[in-house]
Length: 132
Ligand code: FES
Image (cartoon, rainbow, N blue to C red):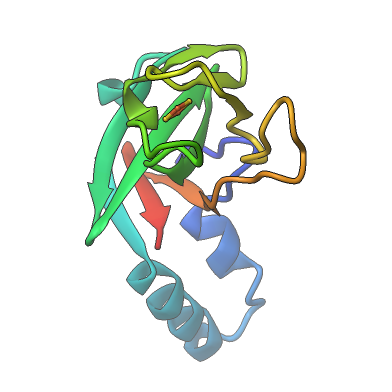
């Protein structure tokens, strides 16, 4: 199992439940039910941005090195498709008018009061899962 910084593996979360098998099963059940698979790790090369669906939500998924980050899919300006934007380091640029956000925090690069909704991401057995 691989753990990426900025997110936590399911086994790490379950492991934090301690030695009680019943508690560990309960935590695993609770944790897994909140995460939806959006693809395999190999589907997202480092430095890539993509639009994925997690349930009924459109998500912009970024891979920065070996770390994954997920934000809402629509730009705060005029709802441009952020998953079709470009990624330089951790800075996402909207394809429509160039607003920029840090995918690690969702914060707008020019106005820190503006912030995208962000989602937890885990990698489990080669699958990328987003908590929605
Ligand atoms: S819609 Fe994203 S910058 Fe305008």
